[in-house]
Length: 121
Image (cartoon, rainbow, N blue to C red; front, side, top):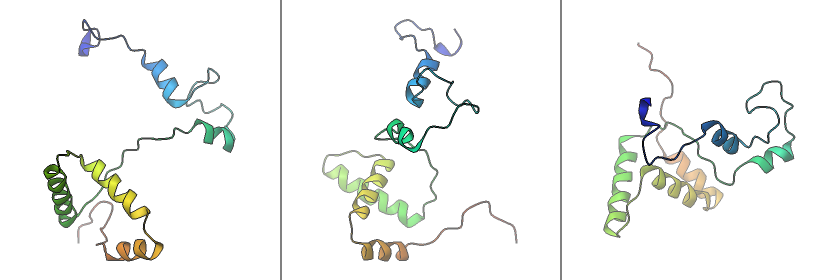
């Protein structure tokens, strides 16, 4: 089979069944059906996973990347290997537990980056 999906030793994977499990489909209307009734707020809260993965592209300054490398080096010396996303999640977790005035102070101290495509001129 093309792409190696049928290789020996690989379990067969029903991707549609897996998608239904992940999306919380209950056997009613197909997931993503635009004509299906919208779930109430309670149903949405129940269907929400306790931990969700969201992919987001981040723009970081050179200083931020240097800070990440410094933290990574510190963790390596302590016998730990971390991914950039783990470091970012740890930093967010730490910052979120700080008093409000510290959060505002840190936010005011970061360099604001231009978002969107660069315009000539």
